[in-house]
Amino acid sequence: MGNSTYQLIEDCEASNKTLYKLYAAIMIMIFILALPLNASVLHLFIFKLKFWKSNSNNIFLFNLVLADILLLFCLPIKAHNFIKGERRSENDTVCKAMLFMLFLNRGASIAFLTVTSIDRYFNVVHPGRKNLLKALKKSPQISILIWLFLLPLTVPTMLKTFECCNSHKTSNDDTLIKDVVDSLREVVFFTQIVIPFVILVYCTVRIVNRLRKKTVGDRTKLKRAVFLVTCVMVVFSFCFLPCALARMVLLIIRVQNASEATQDRAAVAFDGLMVLSYMDCLLDPLVYCFCSTKFKALYLSNYFPFLVKDPQSPLTSTTGNTTHPMRTDVL
Image (cartoon, rainbow, N blue to C red; front, top):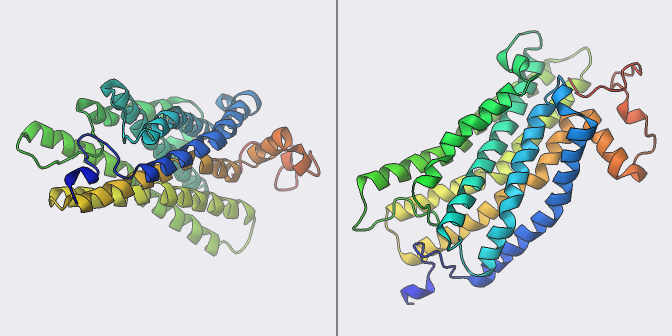
């Protein structure tokens, strides 16, 4: 079989155009479902919950919505490229802008999911201990710091064209600078996933152990905390870990200079799992529901009132005290 039948990573032409059209259809479906979902969530956080006035972690969840909306801007362009049989835009500026936004979205989504779990960990495992996160979550400072920290980590995508996972390409014109840039880009990619995953596993294990040891008192809050961190772990494991593993396999194959057929299959699999990672903008609302009882009640009462039998009951305190109907957080 000739070389032209394989997916040439350098020119980003898809070898299996039918499969990439399927990827595009999946992205279009994600966009159609996620756009009204995230728009409605954004409306609730701004006009109903007034997240900036809340002492809960609503401010972290609001920034998670912003990260998802950032992804939504990229999906139609990405789908258009796939339909044309291209793995990226032929326009260099559009290509770099897209990569920058996708890297930033993934980093922000992972960061705010992780911060939300850490916040719940301190509330459950160390409820009386003062910590910097508890103090800063009452203001936008920590959210701004996270975005500012992510920007320099995303810059490596702009240093050189990240041509369809073309890191560590074996060629005669490889230079030390290019190798350093490629290595830096890969370090950022894997660090953004591996370190938060370790933190999430630790928080989940500690919270679950706390629930097991709790024999008296109110276990409802602990159960909701377990549901939250479990939900975050599911979103993380489903959306981000597969593409990281596929990325690792692809790099190993490229460094070993495997056959073009093998590189072709690895690149196609990586692109498919990257499309899977875009599902986070549909799964994140599960985190909002488990993180705030009021958010779930407000969402149903505003957009699906026919599902609410008693419109007043969801807004009451979970402990049975009806003197605090405007409670916004679970813990």
